[in-house]
Length: 315
Image (tube, helix red, strand yellow):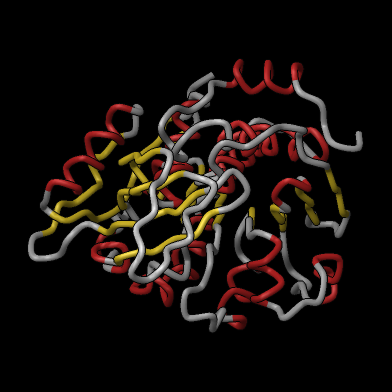
């Protein structure tokens, strides 16, 4: 069987990760952290790396600055087996940078946008709709130049029988674009927000209220619940919930993006309901056992072995 071709249309940046149990900055004080890492970052890049590790044929469409960090990102993508022929180096704009303050429980992010927001429809080659089996985009709220154009991407993909997915990420402006997201849900195969993101987008008191706000026309809404696992509402309105794996996290950076990779892989390979979510949960959980979301990525065999060796909470 030929490998599935997946095109990631996304933001590219480096992550500077400071790790420790007391990383909250204090003005006019200096604190010491346990470790520092410079790694390939961004939601879209981590998802791409995860998919490449799972054996997919991954192409990246994006922009970086013509600078040290930009060239580092391109080389890191290549090292992970990702095709970068659609990645452009642009002058006069710096590559984006995210500073991650990470503990074993959670993380805080400070981001310099740089090229992150600059990708536009003119940077997306028309031929990808004929080449792709699946198209994914991440960080909806950061890719500001594309906000008005994602609907066109989804509709064009559907016309070519290409499946699609997107992950919103956090909205730093906390405006949440409810109407626009609602419209995109109508045309995407997999909508993959976190619990806190979908609750903010639709002003929900609880994730259990999601069904009340969904458009009549929708496919799969998959909500990441962190350590609690995940849930999915499919096109027929059936809800599936699965618990997370019992592990001790090292760094939560990129866990949700690694979940995305597992979900997309499983979806394209016919996994359904509980099996699909448990595979994605395992990919997300494994990401928390390493520093940086894309530093190393598991193969399918690695994920299956993890599932066999680790118990599910409250299972």
